[in-house]
Structures are given as structure tokens and as C-alpha cells.
Length: 194
Figure 1 (cartoon, one colour):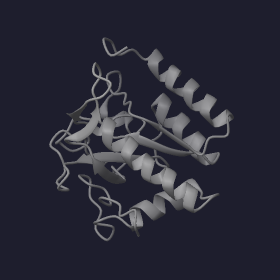
Figure 2 (cartoon, helix red, strand yellow; figure 1 turned 60 degrees about the horizontal axis):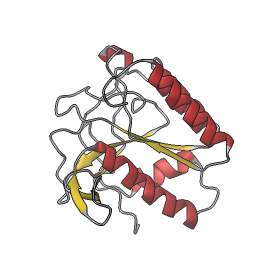
Figure 3 (cartoon, one colour; figure 1 turned 90 degrees about the vertical axis):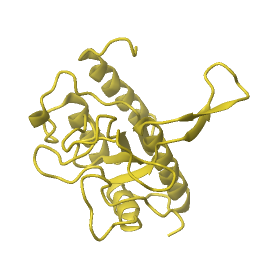
Figure 4 (cartoon, rainbow, N blue to C red; figure 1 turned 30 degrees about the vertical axis):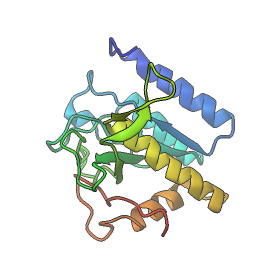
């Protein structure tokens, strides 16, 4: 329900996470972020309900992606569960690779670099909500997160049994600024061909 934001929605997120994990899924992504009932100091990877649940799921072997949010460009504008330590949080770049103004930024409240990576999140072709045979340009980390997760799905096919830590290392290691990560782009735009 986009008309309201209430804390119980985090419980629904956790229920969905538990369900998909119980079904034996390898990968989870959701373009949801929770910040309305938290203070910036709560985005420390140890406080928000969804953050804790996402890290538990990763510890059990589920590869989890989280869109970092659309509250940029100031520092420390990320939302939960993108602050989770083990989650791959994803920021947005325009198609030419420039980080978008709206993409939320790190660091986390405890000083960790976020996002982990970026993916296209501006002028992304998306299905038209009212015309089934048409596309429109969309923007937001709600598009960059799933695109990054789609890359991970292909990598799971290429490397069956890959662990969440291996996936994060592979994506970050192939990314455009893997040698100099920052809180705007993280490790950068991954190169799936690498």
C-alpha cells in the first residue's frame, strides 16, 4: 500500500523473506526501504527489523539485494534493509554511468560504505502499467536493485552453489571503481562479462 507507511510493513517483508527462504530460493530482491520510523543513527546494521532479518537470511545462504533508496544526494540517506552488513545494497546510475541525484548514499551509521554497487536506475525501460504492449522510462533504485539481482541470477547459473559472500565479492571485484569505493557509487557498476 503506497498510500501509507507503517511499521507492520516490515513484518510483512520478513514474512516474505522467510517464505522464499523456506522454498529453497537462492536469491531475494525487494525494492523496499524503511526509514519513516527510524532515526539516521538506527541505520547501523543492528537495529531495523528488516535489516536484522535480511542478515539472518544471508547467513543461511540466501543472496539478498536491497535497493538503497531514493533520498539522495546527501550522505547517510540510505534506508533499511540496505544498511545490513551482509546484504548487497544497490544505488542508481543513469545509462551513461553517472550516479543519479536521487540515489541514496552511505555511509551507514557505523561507518560502512554503502551502496555496495550501482546499476541503471534512470530512463530504464519498464512495462507501461496500463498498456500491456508498451514501455515507458522509469527511474529509481527500485529498478537498479532488480537489474543487479538479474545479473546475480545469471551468475548463479554459471556458478551453481555460489555463496552470498562470493557473489558480493564477485560483483564488487568486477565493478568500475573496485579499487576506490565510496558512499556515492560503492564499488561501482559491475561488469558481468568479467
